[in-house]
Length: 129
Image (cartoon, rainbow, N blue to C red; front, side):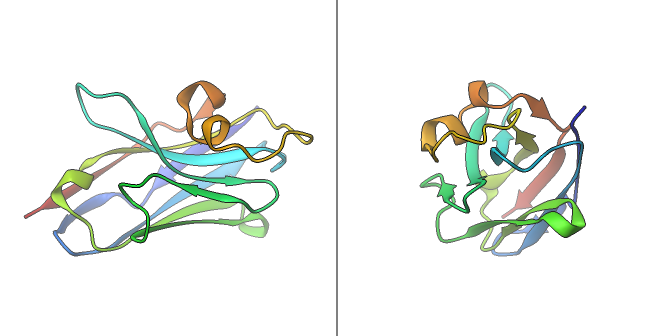
């Protein structure tokens, strides 16, 4: 069973940085892994993803500011967030699919909520102006 545990959230001022971590267990690293965020009243948004072949996907809202990375030997997925804005305030979730060793990298599959099968419980990020 895949288990995901996020950490690293907190409160920072606008322009600051945070690094989120996701501790991963039970996953074979042969599909898509992603970071999502959710604001109350809005749909959960896929903001960064990494495919097993190394292809990266970013939402336009975070491109150039956020970086997703995977360290398999540490069983960890990271999200480095720089130049944070107040509208980045959200609960951030780590997610994976079940594994798809033959599936090519596709943005929709790797960044859509329906493409993910396992979720962490989330970590809160609050950005003050």
